[in-house]
Image (cartoon, rainbow, N blue to C red; front, top):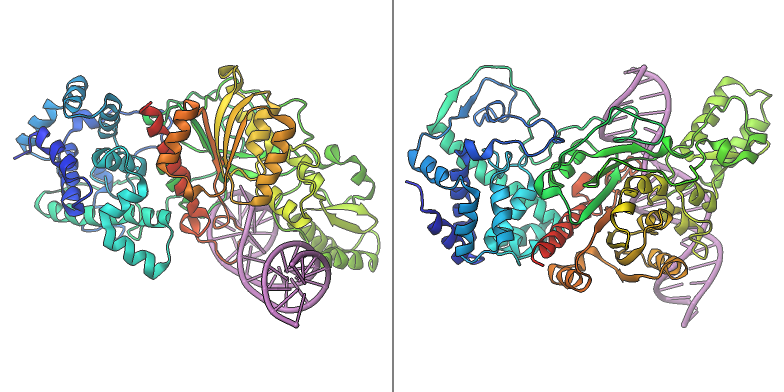
Length: 567
DNA sequence: CTCACTCGGATAGAAGTC
DNA sequence: GACTTCTATCCGAGTGAG
């Protein structure tokens, strides 16, 4: 009943882009073969992955929409032809040789086999939301040809749907990508529902784990650690942790991804699934400097032997700004500032505070204190005079964020606030990147996405790591000028500036990879606009207009990995 | 339940540019 | 004077902790 493997692979190669339905059928066929391969697929590849929900806890097709955990599950296949085929495929070398005979490179064959051996990939939920998207991505890329880029994949898989969705919803490419992944879920799910009616086995209660919702919005929450110090921080020595990354997640290149920690529910779970199931490192920069900055970082860097930038930054408001102590009221007991944001308090806020305080006694009544404390916390105000609270100056924000003084001089004040609010906290990022210092004594080649004002570059510079090359992608012209200006003053390496991540396609990436011999680090934090709690209008999650650029980070990272694998 | 916190956005009007 | 750019001033909800 099973297909000879040569037929499967050859058919896939022949079908190529021309027939999406047939291709999907073949992929599903291949997956069906893999579904029953317990021996191959059930090994664990990662010591850091979150607990994986077992099949028998999760597959409940008839009752998918409700919370009844006593539904059926798909039994393991009793088809001896499949098992025979899979036993045949169990030897990795043999598989590689077979694939090489068919014209695939060893890297391509290795990648495909690695993917096919991954536990999640091997599960019934392959094309569902819960399946790791990077596996789907690699798998499709492999079967469609290694040079196909994501947009081509999407087009060939569901061209009519893409067109329809784009026209009717005005969606961007990455949103379409996400939806196509979702659409696979639907199709595969329908197929599996049909199969499950034939092969069903009852199982008892006690199901564990969260179930992805059917509308594609995964509600899986990811609890933030307390204290939010990541895997470790200077002065916060937790239990020593060693992590084993999935094979596909390891470098080269190293990568470093950043975004707001307090994103809407399910966002970090989704980001994690795209980025190789690596557990995010949540850090509040409050533990390293005088201002809070709760951020999640997903990276494949070593976590041992980190070292902070010296001198350590001031850790309290008074250490950072001693002169404000003079006017600081005793009933304002803040020692740290809240997150430095892009918007500053309007003059009306500070005027109202001054007016309220001057018209009340000393100390002011509790109600006034409460109001003023609230406004000061909300707008990050500091006491600059008697009864006078004021927003931080841009150079003070630069200082707290670890940038050199007047890094952004010459730019409008509003723009400076905006860029700084969107930036890295340099000391925090530098602490994570410090492990690169000993690894690249001759310098690093960096692909910097969503560069902003160059927080990652400044961090590397302050660590004393020479940047041989930085290919920087940043949409803001003012930010590009700031980086260029800083680069010309401090650096000797090559800086290439690109405006739009969407314009950075596979061929150009491959050109840079060939030109520079690859990248050592792919670093970037994609836009948080649609994730941040401050956004009252369009907190749309990862599919939002700006935040969906995360998918471009994912796309470009994989493109770099692919190009480097083919070097 | 209350409370605290959040890499923001839309708009009108001012200011600058041609 | 038309147009663009900049600036000030408004605008709650989602989430989690207690």
